[in-house]
Amino acid sequence: MVTSTSKYKYVTCDPEKCIGCQLCEYICSYTKTGEYNTYRSRIRTIRAEEVLITAVTCRTCENAPCVIACTRDALTQDPETGIVHVDPDRCDGCTWCIEACDFGAISINPATKLAEICDQCEDLEDGPQCVKWCPTKALELTTPDQRAQRARRKLAIEDVLGM
Image: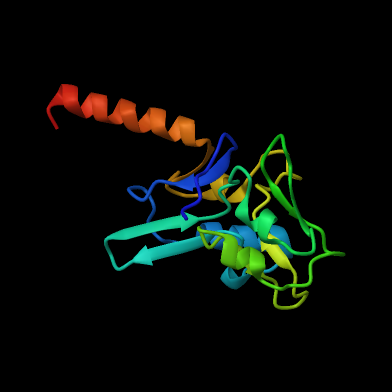
């Protein structure tokens, strides 16, 4: 079963703009852990040879499968933002959430053995630091509806221009 995203905002990447620099991973790991370490990032740069480079993070799925799969109720989803929170007192690092995520957006912190998921830098006034620092503006905080609208507009413009 493929998870569908929902009304919630999430960080998305435009593969036509992404250059694979991994700055998003470095800034994320530094913001969250104080170290520049791509393995500690909550966003992942994905490469499919030289054809496609993109970045993936939590998609704030409606009725998030990771939350449903958590056997210890360590994951909760904010009903207003869709952001998934990890309760460190309940998480035992079982990895059920990782298996349930269709986007590969969850990791286990090797030191604490706890699940880590993008929280869109909700504690920072200027939002997701990966979006803020992306040198090509390939990342943005958006909703699936906003992305679909932009895609339709782009197709309409290309149609008018005969592209």
